[in-house]
Amino acid sequence: MTLVFHERVGLDGRRISPFSWRIRYALAHMGLDPEVVPTRFADVGRIRALSSQDLVPILVDDGKVVHDSWAIACHLEDRYPDRPTLFGGPAGRGAARLVNIWSDTNLNPALRRRITADFIWCLDSGDREHFRRTREAQFGMSLEEYCANPEQSLPALLQVCAPLERTLSEQPFLAGQAPAYVDYVVFSVFQWARIGSPRDAFPADAATLPSLHGWRARMIGLYGGLGDRFPGYPEQRTGPDGRTAD
Ligand SMILES: N[C@@H](CCC(=O)N[C@@H](CS)C(=O)NCC(=O)O)C(=O)O
Image (tube, rainbow, N blue to C red; front, side):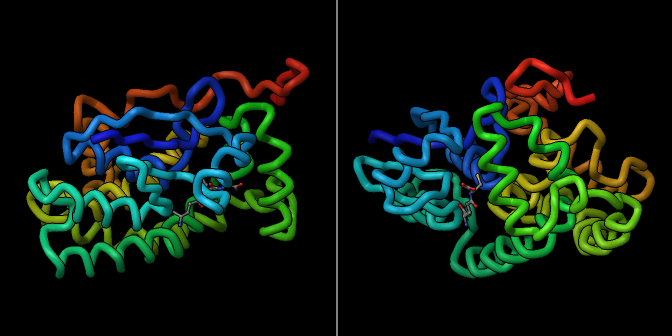
């Protein structure tokens, strides 16, 4: 078996992508240890040549190229049936698909609104112009305008988190008694926000969402502290000319 994981990286090897994080956790869950190819936005030529599309993560498994994190999770589940399961069967896979789509369409935007202007400083300086241009075109405003009202974006985030808090007040993991792919998907978004902002974009007061806080700490600690294996938010926000932003 030859596994190669093309994983998004930022400044000085930071792991900055929620989509890559969920696959990192899935691989650890299954006890798989791929070769990792760190991939910047500037490496899009390699990604395109490999997969005929521009997005990361990508897994190459004995020459078979799989892109899109959901497709990768399904591939791993089907290809390695003797390893610990990511979904716990077809019904679990179906429910995980719902959580995956909900996470990408509801949780991700609620956090993105709070971190994107900070997040750009986690990127390699050579990737920042691409990020700013593409995201500002998507949002129709500057990154700074997009993130200008953290007080206004907080209620929306709290509302999105409510079903997570309720579920985790009744069971230790979203999948039940032990973590599985649904946990990795949802955690990957919090992990991206945790690494991508100097403030905890998550409601700072642990009393607000105590079960979610406890779960996030458990998730960070899994697999030998996987969530803390790479550097967090840079101490200095430094531009390509060496000047600091603050
Ligand atoms: N649906 C895809 C989304 C992957 C995705 O959006 N990746 C982004 C963030 S790492 C990307 O590669 N963007 C390239 C770009 O913005 O140029 C998945 O789940 O893997």
